[in-house]
Length: 288
Image (tube, rainbow, N blue to C red):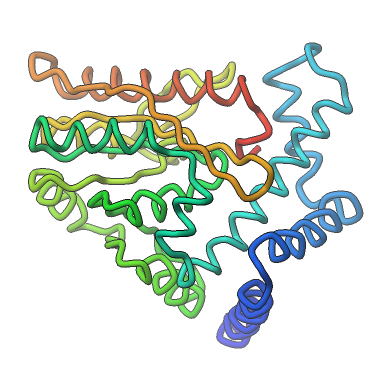
């Protein structure tokens, strides 16, 4: 039964991917927007939960309609990200130059690599087209790699791995040997792209976030501490559907004079504080 379910999910995904890749870029996003509208407005898929979370953060400062607009833009953006991910094998340097407004980001990262000879960590929260930030960075020549979590469906997992690796980006599978592999690459001048705004159920760092607290994983900070490389924040925002702007903040350097746990808390709190500010400035870009 489980194998049948996995096969059905995989075939459905490949059908959608086939449509998304046959259409022009903006038309493919229009195809996604139609299905997002049905899920949001008719089926009300997770609409209530997103609205409650937005209300918790913004309270009476926003009207019901404003909060609903934020929730809709956020959901549509998630669907857009899925469509774009399916199109990764066809993305080119020419596409990246046309779609990505990222010269400041690229200049900062290339200057860091040239002046220090060290790698870096790019913390890229779930804003805008976060998957595209890695692709655009790679297509512009940054030596970037990332860590991927294994999906429950092995067929879908293998397909997503092929998509992410198709442009030449190295994707390390999360596991017992990941720490060693990441440290080795950072010490050789590579850049780790990581999603920082992910809650973890176990041992993490309890950090102020959006008016509450979030238990954030220690990996981002510990990678920085063990290698002496800084953490930059890359905020990706989507404009007019097909334009992606990457802004860069930081860097936050590890402090070798501090105890590791205290320094990890400092780094994580600083990065999450920047993400909090970015979300409040443009809340529709985040994945509520």
